[in-house]
Length: 319
Image 1 (tube, rainbow, N blue to C red):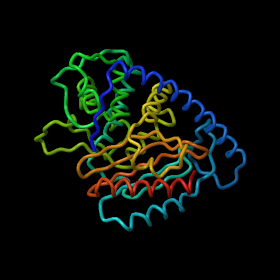
Image 2 (cartoon, rainbow, N blue to C red; image 1 turned 45 degrees about the horizontal axis):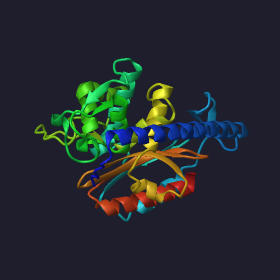
Image 3 (cartoon, one colour; image 1 turned 30 degrees about the vertical axis):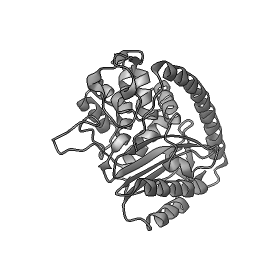
């Protein structure tokens, strides 16, 4: 369900600066705690180890029993007739499961995670600068979610402000600006480089396309992108930390967020069209994990209810 926002660019800059500073501190604290917990668990060796590397160093970590979470999710899905895909994986690599995880579906705004991946890579490589400027061109304005469409033509942004809006407001104008800067081919090449076999960027957002192609993503591919952000391997450590800040600023608090307890820290990205509702993100805590739920042919409210139930069930088993 598209939402329009009416803040000015000046107000946005002030809010963004404050929120990013807070999020940066939060990310640092979360990762410090995560590293300490992971080291302690590995030292204790309380259960059988797996071959996955720990988030701290390269030591193996105890395997996480995912069977309870998987059974809970499978039980919830039995009550729904629409298309649903789920992917869950521990951030320390100690366990994962999925339901229909490799099945490609229309991505809606979840494709913006791939656009972000290429943006971070090009900034790290010096091909783009986060401080490069963009002036809003009336020809770039499209509908749907985001606030850039409501700003005055000629309004200037840094590319990092554009990328930030693309994630936390799901801004379609900002997404298309970045796609124009980097090119569809370069962004799709990033999907191939990352091994995202079910992900496809065919065209920009909210524009007529007569090629019959859709932007696609799978639950496992979305989970991989989020997993690499959280583990600092999608791009440089600094760029991944910035991406986490963007995710933590997410304004859409329905779906998976509704199933988490008050105070839970959740950085995520959502996507919605008339018949699609998706959500995926990183749940921080003592046992952090990535969770993605993609739905098709469920009503908006029904999809949010299902995602909240799945989120609550997984949190009860893993957190």
